[in-house]
Image 1 (cartoon, rainbow, N blue to C red):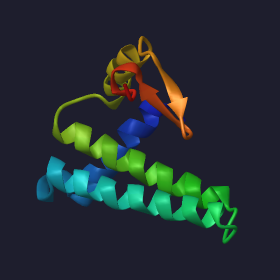
Image 2: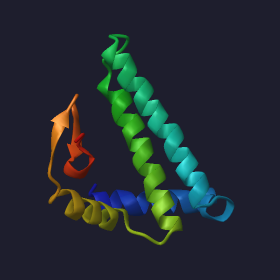
Image 3: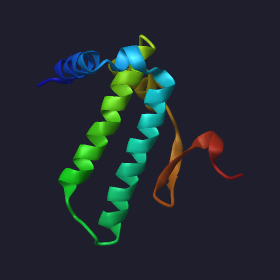
Length: 110
């Protein structure tokens, strides 16, 4: 399936479950944070040799995307457009890698 097809299928699933009637964008944001923490846990397991199951990480990342699809639907935003806006912003960004993280130029230590 394409991203657009999966996006629409996710929205239909949420409609069938009554999520749009009984929740809101903030509750979906809270759910996103829960799912991000589950990704962090799986990454920690991988880093410490507890588990090397990429399918678990894949599933948890997918759960994060589901919550973002639902949150953006509540806000009448398009997730692909959100990504496009972010990419347009970061594509021009300058900076450097510090301790494994990209730090944008304006945030670099003086």
